[in-house]
Image (cartoon, rainbow, N blue to C red; front, side, top):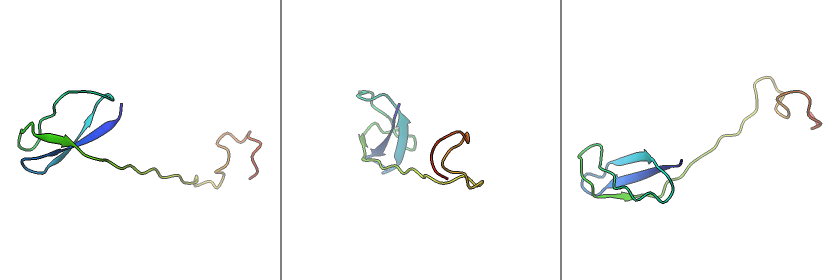
Length: 67
């Protein structure tokens, strides 16, 4: 299930909720309790790095990828 962020129209607090796609549930602000919240556009980031051992191409050592 994805995480969606909602911004409160009363106090501006942003709260994240884990919910199914297409869910119709109204969420209350965790700070002031208002149900006047709107879904915001969220961004995400992913970090891809290498292992500290230097062998980043194959975790098992059996791959045919060049090292």
